[in-house]
Length: 209
Figure 1 (cartoon, rainbow, N blue to C red):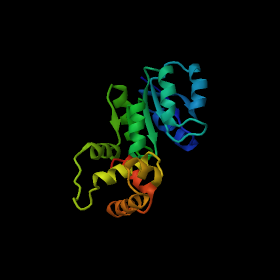
Figure 2 (figure 1 turned 180 degrees about the vertical axis):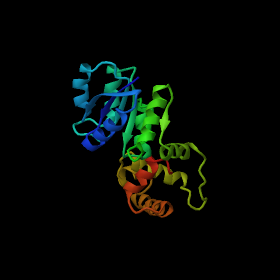
Figure 3 (figure 1 turned 180 degrees about the horizontal axis):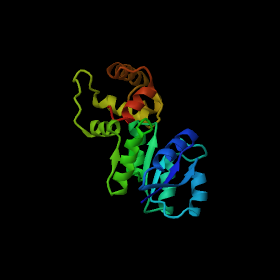
Figure 4 (figure 1 turned 30 degrees about the horizontal axis):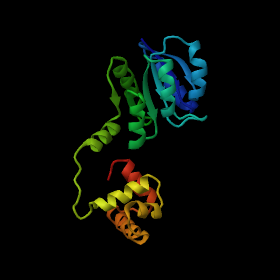
């Protein structure tokens, strides 16, 4: 029997999940919370929780990903499934590194959510097809047009942007002028087809460069 806890701040999502999952003979929804903080305060009143559906964007000071690190010591034998609207690489990998065993999108149909619950409860891991494709793409070989590839120097500058360095600090670190940094930045924008530093950083964090 799956003894399920749901942590989500959207009442409609919780109500829909309860209505569908409670009708399954092998699933029992025994606890719901609208934040990680609330769950940590109240879960001990419910015994036997072995699977948790956890959102990422939650009220309070703790995100779902951060919450995993607090939940696991309390319920080390419970499997944690991320059920969220977020599908960027950074959050996917951060959640998996934190200890989630499955990652599915809220746009998944209810049968898919049930399949995820059963797969995880039986010792497996589950990813929505769109999430699985992102993971495969991230680790798979990438074709890079030689004309669009960043030079080693440009890769160093991109890393400086990711590290939060100013143009001057990047210039000092690489022993080049600020104007040279600016020139490289313009070329980086053109190669990556972006218009801002934030877009460059996102592409780097998403594994696209």
